[in-house]
Length: 201
Image (cartoon, rainbow, N blue to C red; front, top):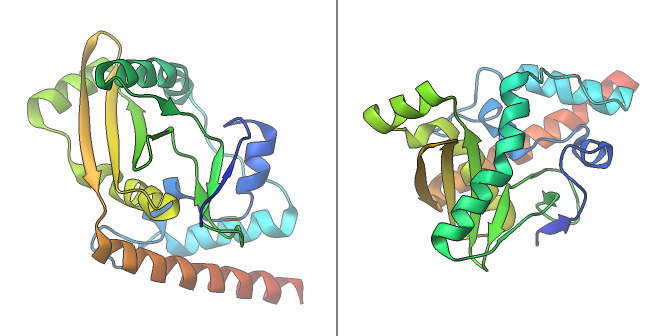
């Protein structure tokens, strides 16, 4: 059963919870949309092993666009809540269960069955998405992973750009993919444990 922590996202406490474990935002590094293993699996395995061994979070790029994305997250959440007349509950980090081997950081939980994830888009990117469409495949593993971790039935993915019409894509559980994802996550966790034990020996 999902374990929800109330830490503030992007805080030191939040980073500590994520240290050395696979998270939903990186599930694409473990498995492809077709259920096959990702080419970046080994690199991600080494990254998390390094974190477990050093006790330190690997530095990652945090540029202006990411900073803007976090700044606009509240705007997107407020818009979504208003348009749907529903509360979006902010949470810290969600573990799949009390083993705390993997988890994710949803941008919000909606009611009893739903979830919310928003992606900030530069204005030209949002126009492109409105004109040419926005593929579900872009964040498929993250969203299906969030559904798996939380046990929820649906998840709304929002592309948000200030002053431009937002895009909302609703995902429902893909049980076939989730079963494969669960299998690959467990295999990854076992490989990670074995690697860390080997390097400690």
